[in-house]
Amino acid sequence: MSLDKILAISGKPGLYELKTQTRTGFVAESLTDKKKMSVNLRHNVSILSEIAIYTYTEEVPLREVFLKIQEKENGERTINHKENKKVLEEYFREILPEYDEDRVYGSDIKKVIQWYNLLTDSKITDFSEPTEDKKESKETVTVSEEEE
Image (tube, rainbow, N blue to C red; front, side, top):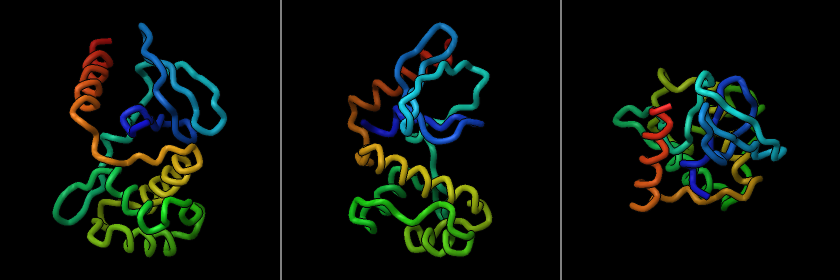
């Protein structure tokens, strides 16, 4: 499974997998407890494949940051996201030395690390570049979400 089906829902802990679309939104399943929930258009939803981290020169897609963590940790879990801010920032600087410290907050770093660990625990470890087929299907989902 790729990151274009993984969602972060504002106000809800953890990550969710997009299961199906409905007339009023879509159904998502929690990666941690596998409970399904209906999500309507009032929720603020972010697709992980659309998130990027600011650097001083460009925006780096989240999947590339996950690849760097995966490489550093040999595919295993990384540090706990509950470490203190200084430890998290030092670790993130090892992963992405050029990240923009003025625009990437401690809470952002905490989320990235927490999400990486959740994905690793859920055996979702394919952070590679989407193929053309995946890009086309992602665009279709995005268009139909906007129509509702």
